Image (tube, rainbow, N blue to C red; front, side, top):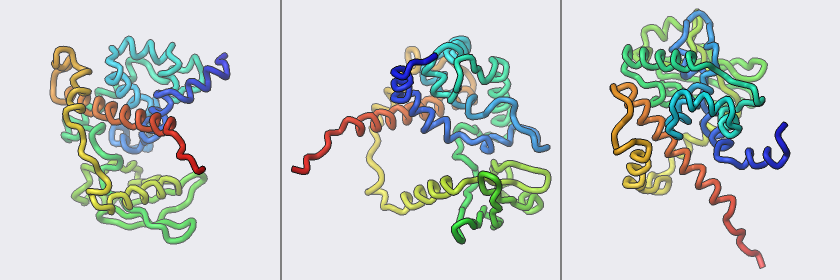
Length: 266
């Protein structure tokens, strides 16, 4: 049993922010190309395995230490959204199998799924009315239907099969259509991101500290040498550490905002 004080500390931890910013934004459909086309789903939640890979590189853990951390470390369980102390989302074999699928897809297509933006192909959502949306890709525009919890847009598979972007499309593939799911909240978030892109660059971007970025990368390497070999494993390391570095900066920014002094109104 976890005490209320410990629950409060867990909720204020870096791992809780990792869960909110990273884990919750990893979507299963972005990795659907790794699995069977006959309406199947992975046995293990994809967001758990991807998040575990990121944590492994962020904390410089071996596979054995990673699994021990998942089993016994409350902070790691918080980062992976695990609700009970005895919950272990996958075995070492499942994680190896997932990485093998990532590797096989990379060899076949040259695409590292950890590198790509979610969706792979630009998807545009237009709100028609309060509960009606039109969803478009480069070659099709369809009306989304509301299900029990989210909207569903089905793209004609016959048109998709001749699309020049077919190899890059990550929408979930069904028997007769490629499917895109979203909620009203996700539509609003996407709309905000589009609006941000319309702001002049000089107003929405600051010069990155290149030297600090390189330094944060090399801290994960012994004597500035990679522990892994091969292009695929090197890219996994690079993007996992890159995501980790960005998350660390976002977390520190949010923590700094929490302690900013409130301006006096007197």
